[in-house]
Length: 153
Image (cartoon, rainbow, N blue to C red; front, side, top):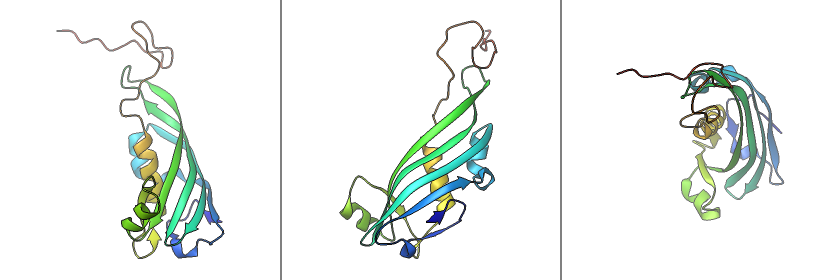
């Protein structure tokens, strides 16, 4: 078993019979995510790691709880994100694509994956591009309690 708090993941240490990467992640380790959200309250990971020759197949999910700003009303709304991970970790991209072209390639420079960067990238890519609370036309937003912004010409 590998800890979610580790900064790196040496792929040579993953067992032939499979391993796990699991646990709670310290949100302070993900500064880019902290910049993208209003707050990050909790983050955890639960991945199966299975060796397939030179490639480590990583399957599972990353859970993130926090707050994000609504682009419609500019209020703060809760965020509960479950990111599905289906990746192949290897030193060469061709090894991953030869095994399964459906795997997302994660390069392991000198046999080591920068674990926190990889996991944070997965979450950042899953964030909504234009986060919005509920669809509403007028009146007070039921999530933030704010009135919609009105542009006056």
